[in-house]
Image (cartoon, rainbow, N blue to C red):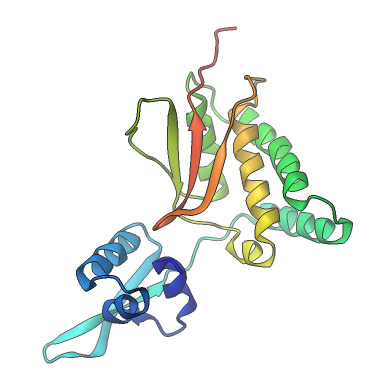
Length: 207
């Protein structure tokens, strides 16, 4: 279990020592991870009793995520209900719906030369708190971390459908102007504090 999931599952919060004991990590490594999650806004911390005299331990709790706009939540919930009744390839169907949705959202975003900027604008508008990561390889693609999930409650109900929907939104936003079909990867909790989106390098051609 990831540290973020562990803290979210603890109703009363946890200390760094408790997290280290459950994960088997070194205490200093655990503290560093917890601090990163706190700085990202995913956790909050407060002094707890039971620490050393004069030095109460920090207790970490999950931060309340900003919910997605009601219209988006209602749409996603309706999609979940439909897919659960219809059967078939839930993830593929959700991805197709998400792609159509992503195209519509991207069409309303400010135009630019870099399609990744459009993807970031769409994800930010939905409440995912996207963060573009520095390129560390040969520059063949872009990695984006999603620091929050405004649909987290729905993800818990049907992760395949919701993650498929989110993947489709990214694909649609990236290709909303009929750019070439390019591979997009979504890794749920692919980073310690975030889901990871991997995008290919694409540029819009002048019309």
